[in-house]
Length: 247
Length: 229
Image (cartoon, rainbow over all chains, first blue to last red; front, side, top):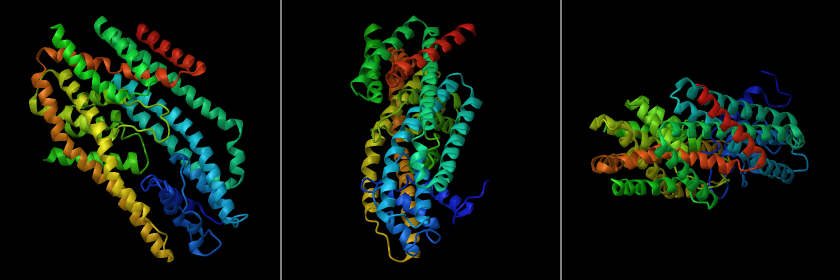
């Protein structure tokens, strides 16, 4: 593990990282992740923050909300800026935090919510359809390995770059990673759709036609913002009644 | 009684992961059902149930703050219903039992979301009362208390809700299986057609030209591989 340049040691960053795993535990409407951020920063409050032990925490009690996987990146940057004396005062650190939080929330949602997570879930569903248990376990392991890497390296990157983080996240490489994740998810999603279609075809004409009809209905419902779960619930009594009528 | 405690512990731990901690995907129905199946037997039936629920709840790029059913509760209660129903009744019509369990899981997910939001209000009010103390040691202690307390609250509420929902879910599944009669074909057809919802979700989520093409390539590949095999 590479040594870190700064007041904080690798062990300090590890403590911050461990506490950041619970950033969602204290999420609430008014401050969102602010208590989680305070809890994580509390691990190093004796080493960073120019106004005594209370200084660091006193700067970071305000509202904070970003993608949970991106919190380490922001906090790494915050720790670096605080360590350097919080260039231009607490207002500046706060501005940095809010700017990074907004930008990384969008990037994180696209990467994780629209890319990596659907990719993992569609692959998991495909393996579950084929009853391939090692595949299911592999998806879980690989997804979590990716999460650990992003979060842990994110903390280190933020701590290395400080203000330079904004520049790093404006680079084309980040955009390419986002596009790649979405493209991979689309490919895996298409694969899953193909597996479902062929599976329905194999079960006979009746299942295939019903599947096609439900797919069209669900697509129309999705366009109108009707939750898929409620559609599925509503279709159960319909299927029940139709079966009774046809018998 | 042991079953209820087991389901409560599984739901609590998975909720801790999904809502308060790492978010490892273990709380998603396809994985949680596997855990339930391994604990209660009938792994294949539990996985079938979890897969059906996952395909319905396959949220791709859901908007920030979008309302989603409680997938942890739905998955655990649905898979638990499938396992325990098959275990207690020994009904040979496995597809019908799973269809009933999936219906119960979907309902549990919706009810769980509503109940959990109400229960979460008390937790949020408590968290909003947090004020940073002047003393550094007190601040550390309070932050630990609030974080651990909040995480435990989430786990306990999910565990209790799962334990409360399971008996009702089992009773409902029994009614569905007992009264199905000639409607059993409709219920099993419903279960077979549920994955279509995932197809619609995928088509809707990747509706742009580039992503749509990639999805079409993926679909075509799956069809070709299926045809070759």
